[in-house]
Length: 308
Image 1 (cartoon, rainbow, N blue to C red):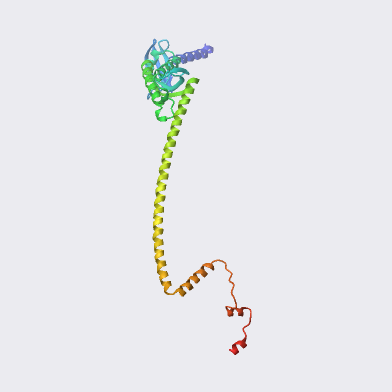
Image 2 (cartoon, rainbow, N blue to C red; image 1 turned 135 degrees about the horizontal axis):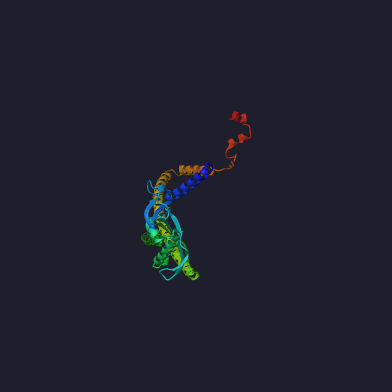
Protein backbone atom coordinates (compact mmCIF):
# COMPACT_ATOMS: atom_id res chain seq x y z
CA UNK A 1 0.00 0.00 0.00
CA UNK A 2 2.78 2.36 0.90
CA UNK A 3 4.45 1.45 -2.37
CA UNK A 4 1.48 2.74 -4.40
CA UNK A 5 0.87 5.83 -2.27
CA UNK A 6 3.19 8.01 -4.40
CA UNK A 7 1.38 7.03 -7.57
CA UNK A 8 -1.96 7.81 -6.02
CA UNK A 9 -0.78 11.23 -4.89
CA UNK A 10 0.62 11.98 -8.37
CA UNK A 11 -2.67 10.98 -9.99
CA UNK A 12 -4.63 13.13 -7.55
CA UNK A 13 -2.37 16.13 -8.25
CA UNK A 14 -2.79 15.62 -11.97
CA UNK A 15 -6.54 15.46 -11.63
CA UNK A 16 -6.53 18.58 -9.44
CA UNK A 17 -4.44 20.43 -12.02
CA UNK A 18 -6.73 19.43 -14.86
CA UNK A 19 -9.74 20.42 -12.79
CA UNK A 20 -8.15 23.79 -12.02
CA UNK A 21 -7.47 24.35 -15.71
CA UNK A 22 -11.11 23.72 -16.51
CA UNK A 23 -12.49 26.06 -13.86
CA UNK A 24 -9.83 28.84 -13.91
CA UNK A 25 -8.68 31.24 -16.60
CA UNK A 26 -6.32 34.23 -16.75
CA UNK A 27 -7.13 37.55 -18.40
CA UNK A 28 -4.23 39.59 -19.88
CA UNK A 29 -4.63 43.33 -19.43
CA UNK A 30 -2.83 44.22 -22.66
CA UNK A 31 -4.72 42.08 -25.15
CA UNK A 32 -7.56 39.91 -23.77
CA UNK A 33 -11.30 40.21 -24.00
CA UNK A 34 -12.78 36.99 -22.57
CA UNK A 35 -16.33 35.81 -23.22
CA UNK A 36 -17.80 33.14 -20.92
CA UNK A 37 -20.52 31.14 -22.61
CA UNK A 38 -22.94 28.95 -20.69
CA UNK A 39 -24.33 26.21 -22.93
CA UNK A 40 -23.36 28.33 -25.97
CA UNK A 41 -24.87 31.62 -24.75
CA UNK A 42 -22.70 34.54 -23.64
CA UNK A 43 -23.25 35.09 -19.92
CA UNK A 44 -20.15 37.06 -18.94
CA UNK A 45 -17.69 39.45 -20.61
CA UNK A 46 -14.32 40.21 -19.02
CA UNK A 47 -12.44 43.03 -20.75
CA UNK A 48 -8.80 43.14 -19.66
CA UNK A 49 -8.67 46.87 -20.39
CA UNK A 50 -11.17 47.57 -17.59
CA UNK A 51 -9.83 48.41 -14.14
CA UNK A 52 -9.41 45.32 -11.94
CA UNK A 53 -10.47 42.93 -14.71
CA UNK A 54 -7.04 41.45 -15.43
CA UNK A 55 -5.84 38.41 -13.49
CA UNK A 56 -7.20 35.01 -12.41
CA UNK A 57 -10.92 34.22 -12.78
CA UNK A 58 -13.13 31.20 -12.19
CA UNK A 59 -15.88 29.46 -14.14
CA UNK A 60 -17.82 26.24 -14.30
CA UNK A 61 -15.98 23.40 -16.02
CA UNK A 62 -16.54 22.46 -19.64
CA UNK A 63 -19.07 21.68 -21.12
CA UNK A 64 -21.14 23.88 -18.82
CA UNK A 65 -19.10 27.00 -19.50
CA UNK A 66 -16.51 27.73 -22.17
CA UNK A 67 -13.88 30.50 -22.62
CA UNK A 68 -13.76 32.50 -25.89
CA UNK A 69 -10.76 34.83 -26.20
CA UNK A 70 -10.72 37.92 -28.40
CA UNK A 71 -7.86 40.31 -29.06
CA UNK A 72 -8.50 43.82 -27.72
CA UNK A 73 -5.58 45.43 -29.53
CA UNK A 74 -5.78 47.63 -32.62
CA UNK A 75 -5.36 45.77 -35.91
CA UNK A 76 -4.34 46.98 -39.39
CA UNK A 77 -6.23 45.82 -42.46
CA UNK A 78 -5.65 46.46 -46.17
CA UNK A 79 -8.04 45.90 -49.03
CA UNK A 80 -7.02 44.03 -52.13
CA UNK A 81 -6.26 46.03 -55.26
CA UNK A 82 -9.49 46.61 -57.12
CA UNK A 83 -10.53 48.27 -60.36
CA UNK A 84 -13.22 50.89 -59.80
CA UNK A 85 -15.10 53.42 -61.88
CA UNK A 86 -15.14 56.99 -60.64
CA UNK A 87 -17.58 59.78 -61.40
CA UNK A 88 -16.28 60.62 -64.88
CA UNK A 89 -16.64 56.99 -66.00
CA UNK A 90 -12.88 56.53 -65.70
CA UNK A 91 -11.54 53.20 -64.50
CA UNK A 92 -8.89 53.30 -61.78
CA UNK A 93 -7.21 50.77 -59.51
CA UNK A 94 -7.07 51.61 -55.81
CA UNK A 95 -6.59 50.12 -52.36
CA UNK A 96 -7.23 51.33 -48.80
CA UNK A 97 -6.12 50.39 -45.32
CA UNK A 98 -7.75 50.86 -41.93
CA UNK A 99 -7.17 50.36 -38.21
CA UNK A 100 -9.88 48.55 -36.24
CA UNK A 101 -10.52 47.24 -32.74
CA UNK A 102 -13.34 45.45 -30.92
CA UNK A 103 -15.88 47.76 -29.26
CA UNK A 104 -18.78 45.35 -28.56
CA UNK A 105 -17.38 41.83 -28.08
CA UNK A 106 -20.78 40.22 -27.42
CA UNK A 107 -22.22 41.58 -30.68
CA UNK A 108 -19.10 40.44 -32.52
CA UNK A 109 -19.45 36.91 -31.11
CA UNK A 110 -23.09 36.70 -32.13
CA UNK A 111 -22.33 37.97 -35.67
CA UNK A 112 -19.04 36.14 -36.31
CA UNK A 113 -18.39 32.88 -34.48
CA UNK A 114 -14.88 32.48 -35.87
CA UNK A 115 -12.51 35.43 -35.22
CA UNK A 116 -10.59 34.53 -38.37
CA UNK A 117 -13.54 35.78 -40.44
CA UNK A 118 -13.32 39.33 -39.08
CA UNK A 119 -10.78 40.52 -41.65
CA UNK A 120 -12.82 39.14 -44.54
CA UNK A 121 -16.01 40.84 -43.33
CA UNK A 122 -14.30 44.22 -42.79
CA UNK A 123 -12.46 43.99 -46.11
CA UNK A 124 -15.79 43.49 -47.84
CA UNK A 125 -17.22 46.58 -46.11
CA UNK A 126 -14.20 48.70 -47.05
CA UNK A 127 -14.27 47.68 -50.69
CA UNK A 128 -18.02 48.22 -50.93
CA UNK A 129 -18.00 51.71 -49.40
CA UNK A 130 -14.85 52.68 -51.31
CA UNK A 131 -16.65 51.85 -54.57
CA UNK A 132 -19.77 53.78 -53.47
CA UNK A 133 -17.82 56.91 -52.49
CA UNK A 134 -15.40 56.97 -55.43
CA UNK A 135 -18.27 56.44 -57.85
CA UNK A 136 -19.31 60.06 -57.16
CA UNK A 137 -15.80 61.57 -57.18
CA UNK A 138 -14.24 63.33 -60.19
CA UNK A 139 -10.61 62.75 -61.13
CA UNK A 140 -9.48 66.31 -60.38
CA UNK A 141 -10.37 65.78 -56.70
CA UNK A 142 -7.76 63.02 -56.52
CA UNK A 143 -5.12 64.17 -59.03
CA UNK A 144 -4.57 67.89 -59.52
CA UNK A 145 -1.71 70.35 -59.90
CA UNK A 146 -3.46 72.63 -57.41
CA UNK A 147 -3.30 71.08 -53.90
CA UNK A 148 -6.31 73.14 -52.81
CA UNK A 149 -8.54 71.29 -55.29
CA UNK A 150 -7.55 67.82 -54.03
CA UNK A 151 -9.99 66.24 -51.55
CA UNK A 152 -8.25 62.98 -50.62
CA UNK A 153 -8.69 63.66 -46.90
CA UNK A 154 -12.39 64.38 -47.36
CA UNK A 155 -12.77 61.19 -49.42
CA UNK A 156 -11.06 59.17 -46.67
CA UNK A 157 -13.26 60.78 -44.02
CA UNK A 158 -16.43 59.91 -45.95
CA UNK A 159 -15.35 56.28 -46.39
CA UNK A 160 -14.41 56.08 -42.69
CA UNK A 161 -17.77 57.49 -41.62
CA UNK A 162 -19.73 54.97 -43.69
CA UNK A 163 -17.64 51.91 -42.82
CA UNK A 164 -17.50 52.79 -39.10
CA UNK A 165 -21.28 53.09 -38.89
CA UNK A 166 -21.88 49.72 -40.57
CA UNK A 167 -19.09 47.82 -38.79
CA UNK A 168 -20.18 49.07 -35.37
CA UNK A 169 -23.83 48.30 -36.03
CA UNK A 170 -23.30 44.87 -37.62
CA UNK A 171 -20.21 43.53 -35.85
CA UNK A 172 -19.46 45.72 -32.84
CA UNK A 173 -16.14 46.76 -34.42
CA UNK A 174 -14.91 50.36 -34.32
CA UNK A 175 -12.58 51.92 -36.90
CA UNK A 176 -10.10 54.55 -35.71
CA UNK A 177 -8.83 55.60 -39.14
CA UNK A 178 -8.93 54.88 -42.84
CA UNK A 179 -5.74 55.44 -44.82
CA UNK A 180 -6.15 57.15 -48.11
CA UNK A 181 -5.78 55.47 -51.44
CA UNK A 182 -2.25 54.23 -50.93
CA UNK A 183 -2.30 52.83 -54.48
CA UNK A 184 -3.95 54.78 -57.30
CA UNK A 185 -3.50 53.49 -60.84
CA UNK A 186 -4.95 54.40 -64.21
CA UNK A 187 -5.23 52.51 -67.50
CA UNK A 188 -2.64 53.58 -70.10
CA UNK A 189 -5.08 55.49 -72.30
CA UNK A 190 -6.54 57.34 -69.33
CA UNK A 191 -3.06 58.06 -67.95
CA UNK A 192 -2.10 59.72 -71.23
CA UNK A 193 -5.16 62.00 -71.15
CA UNK A 194 -4.60 62.86 -67.49
CA UNK A 195 -0.93 63.67 -68.10
CA UNK A 196 -1.83 65.87 -71.10
CA UNK A 197 -4.38 67.74 -68.98
CA UNK A 198 -1.85 68.18 -66.21
CA UNK A 199 0.72 69.51 -68.70
CA UNK A 200 -1.85 71.96 -70.06
CA UNK A 201 -2.63 73.16 -66.54
CA UNK A 202 1.07 73.59 -65.80
CA UNK A 203 1.57 75.57 -69.03
CA UNK A 204 -1.31 77.81 -68.02
CA UNK A 205 0.25 78.33 -64.61
CA UNK A 206 3.63 79.09 -66.23
CA UNK A 207 2.03 81.69 -68.53
CA UNK A 208 0.27 83.28 -65.57
CA UNK A 209 3.46 83.46 -63.49
CA UNK A 210 5.40 84.88 -66.45
CA UNK A 211 2.75 87.56 -67.00
CA UNK A 212 2.76 88.45 -63.31
CA UNK A 213 6.56 88.58 -63.33
CA UNK A 214 6.64 90.80 -66.43
CA UNK A 215 4.08 93.15 -64.89
CA UNK A 216 6.13 93.37 -61.70
CA UNK A 217 9.31 94.01 -63.74
CA UNK A 218 7.61 96.76 -65.76
CA UNK A 219 6.38 98.38 -62.56
CA UNK A 220 9.90 98.30 -61.07
CA UNK A 221 11.39 99.73 -64.29
CA UNK A 222 8.75 102.47 -64.33
CA UNK A 223 9.52 103.47 -60.74
CA UNK A 224 13.28 103.41 -61.47
CA UNK A 225 12.85 105.58 -64.59
CA UNK A 226 10.72 108.09 -62.70
CA UNK A 227 13.30 108.25 -59.89
CA UNK A 228 16.14 108.68 -62.42
CA UNK A 229 14.33 111.52 -64.21
CA UNK A 230 13.63 113.23 -60.90
CA UNK A 231 17.28 113.00 -59.82
CA UNK A 232 18.54 114.25 -63.21
CA UNK A 233 16.13 117.17 -63.15
CA UNK A 234 17.29 118.13 -59.66
CA UNK A 235 20.96 117.79 -60.71
CA UNK A 236 20.44 119.90 -63.85
CA UNK A 237 18.65 122.58 -61.87
CA UNK A 238 21.42 122.62 -59.27
CA UNK A 239 24.09 122.75 -61.99
CA UNK A 240 22.32 125.70 -63.62
CA UNK A 241 22.28 127.54 -60.30
CA UNK A 242 25.99 126.87 -59.75
CA UNK A 243 26.79 127.90 -63.34
CA UNK A 244 24.86 131.16 -62.92
CA UNK A 245 26.73 131.91 -59.68
CA UNK A 246 30.06 131.21 -61.43
CA UNK A 247 29.22 133.45 -64.36
CA UNK A 248 28.26 136.23 -61.96
CA UNK A 249 31.58 135.86 -60.10
CA UNK A 250 33.47 135.78 -63.42
CA UNK A 251 31.75 138.92 -64.62
CA UNK A 252 32.68 140.66 -61.37
CA UNK A 253 36.33 139.52 -61.74
CA UNK A 254 36.49 140.64 -65.39
CA UNK A 255 35.23 144.07 -64.35
CA UNK A 256 38.13 144.35 -61.89
CA UNK A 257 40.62 143.09 -64.51
CA UNK A 258 39.52 145.82 -66.94
CA UNK A 259 40.59 148.42 -64.40
CA UNK A 260 44.23 147.03 -64.40
CA UNK A 261 44.91 144.86 -67.50
CA UNK A 262 48.64 144.33 -66.71
CA UNK A 263 47.91 143.01 -63.23
CA UNK A 264 45.24 140.76 -64.68
CA UNK A 265 47.72 139.33 -67.20
CA UNK A 266 50.24 138.77 -64.40
CA UNK A 267 47.68 136.79 -62.34
CA UNK A 268 46.69 134.82 -65.43
CA UNK A 269 50.37 133.96 -66.02
CA UNK A 270 50.69 132.75 -62.42
CA UNK A 271 47.65 130.54 -62.81
CA UNK A 272 49.09 129.13 -66.02
CA UNK A 273 52.42 128.35 -64.31
CA UNK A 274 50.68 126.83 -61.30
CA UNK A 275 48.61 124.58 -63.56
CA UNK A 276 51.62 123.58 -65.67
CA UNK A 277 53.96 122.87 -62.74
CA UNK A 278 51.61 120.39 -61.08
CA UNK A 279 53.20 117.64 -63.18
CA UNK A 280 56.85 116.95 -63.97
CA UNK A 281 58.12 120.02 -65.84
CA UNK A 282 61.47 120.93 -67.40
CA UNK A 283 62.25 124.70 -67.53
CA UNK A 284 64.80 126.10 -69.99
CA UNK A 285 66.10 129.54 -68.83
CA UNK A 286 68.14 131.97 -70.91
CA UNK A 287 71.22 133.26 -69.00
CA UNK A 288 71.40 136.39 -71.17
CA UNK A 289 67.99 137.39 -69.94
CA UNK A 290 68.81 136.53 -66.33
CA UNK A 291 72.54 137.25 -65.62
CA UNK A 292 72.26 135.91 -62.13
CA UNK A 293 72.06 132.40 -63.54
CA UNK A 294 75.69 132.62 -64.70
CA UNK A 295 76.82 132.33 -61.10
CA UNK A 296 75.67 128.70 -61.16
CA UNK A 297 78.81 127.82 -63.22
CA UNK A 298 81.07 130.96 -62.92
CA UNK A 299 82.62 132.56 -59.89
CA UNK A 300 81.63 136.13 -59.34
CA UNK A 301 84.55 138.51 -60.15
CA UNK A 302 85.53 140.88 -57.37
CA UNK A 303 87.06 143.18 -59.99
CA UNK A 304 83.72 143.77 -61.39
CA UNK A 305 82.45 144.90 -58.02
CA UNK A 306 85.54 147.13 -57.48
CA UNK A 307 85.05 148.84 -60.79
CA UNK A 308 81.49 149.46 -59.87
